[in-house]
Length: 146
Length: 146
Image (cartoon, rainbow over all chains, first blue to last red):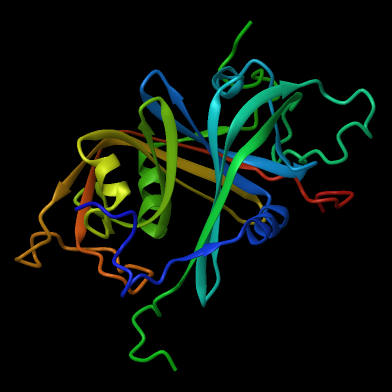
């Protein structure tokens, strides 16, 4: 018997609505992209921004990441936690390279690369689905929730 | 001309040795697993521990994640940053379900699930490769590094 999560009586996972997901996407700056190379998964941390409802990343031109992403189905993920809850947001979509903006107003926001290398390739992920979950964190080795 | 990173003169990425990678793996508790489902990538945040040189995660039995992971090539990733540097570690390997330890000494450590649902399936990832990179963070909108 396969279920998508744990049984309903014990399942503390909460599905976030899309508005909540985008709020998290707007607030973070570091995510991860998973792609399939042949039948093998690959995962890369990336700096990103949200622009016009897309996930925009910058990376060095000619890299393996660019080769993998172009015209590919990709999954983009962010997650985090505070003392009370953990959460994650997953964006599935298609990646395409877009021209670096000759007119800087064309793309309103571009992520500032964390590293000082040339970061000229601009990849845009157009979301197909945006899903998110949050869950209460179990207190770490504390005897009560108080 | 395709290169794996940016040109040597500007490349601030530093490859970490395996000992450094394991130090990060030991210190963290939340990572992400990427797997391929058909030709589609999937990514899941997971709570984990390192035990006997393996990545051990717990999850609810019968979940989609368990189905995807068993006997699959998987990629496990952690990343983080402080004010000075960012870093990421990627473990590639094979996942298999192991019996929950009847003898608790069989698996010395098990991750404490963050959520209070039943977490009975134990998945062990045996690493094939462990790689890591670190890079200096660009100061955020500050005029100098001083």
